[in-house]
Amino acid sequence: MEQLLVALDVDTVAEARAMADRLRGTVGGFKIGSRLFTGTGPGFVEELAARGDRVFLDLKFHDIPNTVAGAVAAATRLGVWMVNVHASGGSAMMRAAREAAGEEAARRSIRPPLVIAVTVLTSLDDSALSQIGFNTSAAGQVERLAALTQAAGLDGVVASPQEIAIIRRHCGPRFSIVTPGIRGAGDAKGDQSRTMSAADALAAGASYLVVGRPIIGADDPREAAGRIAVECRA
Ligand code: C5P
Image 1 (cartoon, rainbow, N blue to C red):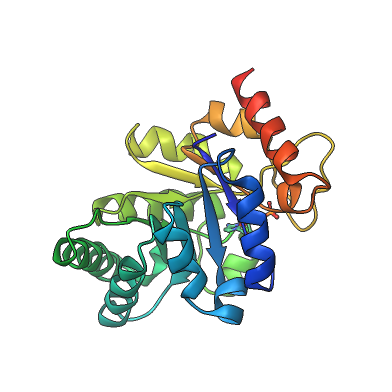
Image 2: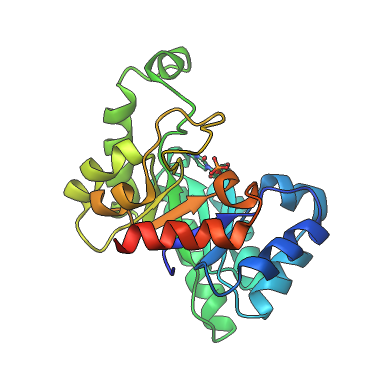
């Protein structure tokens, strides 16, 4: 299932490689986040990309424009398919990220990665936002930052299941919405509170689903991924 991205949230390359090998062909790509990347470095990202897997490098860059541009250029050289930044880094930072991806890809005659932005971390609620000085609700802030992301020329945003519909309405059909927090009826929620089933998230307008533990923690990850695909087709 092309829209299903599996979070390889493990500690070692050996575990990540074994999981990717089990899932290849049933899922649309693999997400590598700060846990695996910080522990093991860029080699495995390059390895997956070189064998043709779609890699979403989820490092959520947030720094001055020049530094983020350099990081996005480096990610482009690794061959990633999608990379992300924090929208709260601002419009100039996001534009620098977009340009760096385009320029580096042109130099190498490759297709530039999709560059998307995190609006508001799903772990932040209204009171946590007010603590850090934001006086809008999480929903209002998501809407504002999604619009800023689109205006900066980025390809889409990461959004919780609850935010999909409003972003889709405001940003139109071509804007990518990447949604974690996917849980089936029988899945443990873990630390995710606002969850939705894969089928419901797609129906609400998600472009891609990020699923971690319900697949990588299953006794049979391939079967678990297949089950989600069947549920979405039904
Ligand atoms: O295991 P689970 O399905 O909860 O994994 C979801 C993945 O999506 C994790 O890698 C998590 O870091 C990531 N993520 C998230 N919420 C966000 C952004 C990313 O759960 N807002």
